[in-house]
Amino acid sequence: MFEPELVHPVHRFAHRSIDFSRRIAVMAIINRTPDSFYDAGANFALEAAVRSARDAVEAGADWVDIGGVPFAPGPPLGAAEEAERIVPVIRAVREASDVVVSADTFLPEVAEAAIDAGADVINDTTGLAYPGLASVVAEAGVHLVLTHSLAAPRTDYARPVYDDVVSEVADFLRRKVDVALAAGVAPEKIVVDPGHDLNKNTLHTLEITRRFSEIASLGYPALAAVSNKDFIGEALDLEKQERTPGSLAAATMCAMNGARIVRMHNVRESVQAMRLVETAMGWREPAYLKHNMSDANEPAHGQPAES
Image 1 (cartoon, helix red, strand yellow):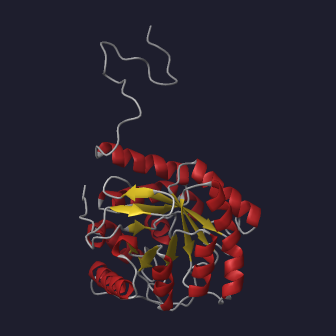
Image 2 (spheres, one colour):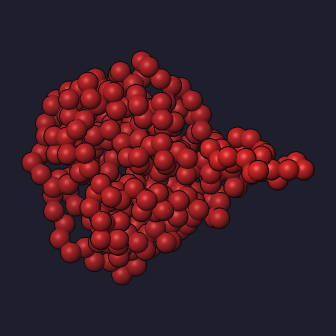
C-alpha cells in the first residue's frame, strides 16, 4: 500500500480533525438537483435531502458533500437559486452533527452563503474556473477541494486527448494549488481531486485509478470521486444502479494507492470497506478478536455449533 508523505497530515475542520496519515474519510454525496447524475432528483425536495444527509451521518460518513448543480453540461443556474438549494441542507446538517460539511459549488457568491450556513469546505469541480473563489475560501479560513477538469462550467468537452493523462492532471493540480496559495489559502486547507470521468474517457479514468499514487504524491490529501461513474459502467457493462461492487473496488484501489477521501453514494458499504483497509494497515484495532484466539473456535455468527 502506498502511503503518501503529506505536507500536513492532520487537517482541522470547524468541528473535528482528521489525521489523513491514519484515516480514509468517506464523503457522502447529497445532490439537491432535479437532474442528478445518480439519483435522478430523489433528493431534490428539501426534506428528502436533509433526511439523506442525516442517514449518511448515521451510516458512518465522515463528510457530507452537498451540491445544487451537476457537473454535466446544461443551462447555467443563478447563484441565488443555487444557494437556495444547498444552504438549508447545510444548515440542517450543521445543526445536527459535527460531521465535515462541504458545498459542491464553483461560484464565489454561493460559496459565501454556504460558509455562512456552516460549510467547512468548498468543493470546486471546475479547478477555480472563477479565481475569486479562492479568495472567498482564504478569507473564511475554510478548506478547498481543487479538482481537475478542462471544460468551462456546465459545457461539453468532446473527445478529450492527453499525452499522459496522469502527468497532465498532476501538473494541472500543482498549478491550481499555487493559485490557491497565492490567494491566501493555507496549505493545510487544501485537498486535491484528479476528477475521475470529468472531461476524461474511461481509459483515462482507469489509468488515473491505477496510478493514483502519482496524484497522492502531490502531498495534499487526495480525493477519489469514483462512485457509480461511467468508467465503471463501461468497464463492466453495468447500469448505474448495478455499479456498487465496482465502485467499492475502485475506491479501494485508490485508497491503497494513497487516496485519503473517497466520495461515495453507498455510505454504509463504503465505510465498511475503508475501515477494513485502515484495520489491515494497522491504523485501527479490530472490533474484536475471537477467531483462533482460544483452544477451540466458537461457531461463526449465525452458524450452528458442530455436534
